Picture 1: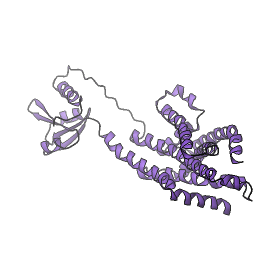
Picture 2: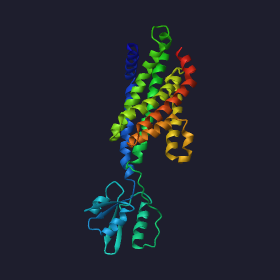
Picture 3: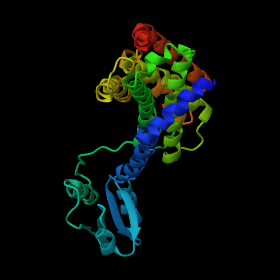
Length: 329
């Protein structure tokens, strides 16, 4: 155990000296903060309409069907702000649209059509509004973005393992370890432990920054821990054969392809085609983490998905075992 901790301490000292550990530790927080800033702007991208408080209830109810309605006292002051908000003023039977003039292209015409239909119901709207209840209210960008960041963070953990191994190779430490009492198992655990810690820390950081409530952290821990193995194995398989960091990172970037393909496939593919993603551990991670974020996951689902991830990981390890063993020799 002491030898394992010595490897971890060595990696921390080496990583903080060139800021690697600090950068990778800050990355999930920074990505989550950027996502948190983008979520409100996406939510506010709908049609926004300002009305006076004494506007007839009939037109207020009608406008709320197609736009976000805001009651104001000072129409001019509200319209002149930086965001895209239109004013609708009702005078007797006349409806007037008030604009600043720099609103998003096309939105003025859309509002004209909506108001025109209110005044002449024979006009057909170029949009169709439908409401459906999926049992949960959450920004899709927050949900899918958090899921992507958590899974992406497992790749950062693998990248940390990879870069630490490359540094050991450059200093010929791996060759020296083979003639010391240190066992190969202790070396592998010691070099991989920091990557696992970074992955688990990053997942918790994303959840905390984005403000998810009621999350079962034990379920999240089990799921993220399972997917961390695939990132670690890929990190070891690339790190032990790479002689310098640039080529190692370039090789690691290829992992982003199956990650993104799995996540976007799960989001956009019809249900009947989802089976083509069953080969990917990242799909199973996405599936269970999404339900964890929605507070809908069960332990049965967590154990099933984690088991599938570990089985796929074991198959990947069998395929890469000879490469890893030769690289550590």
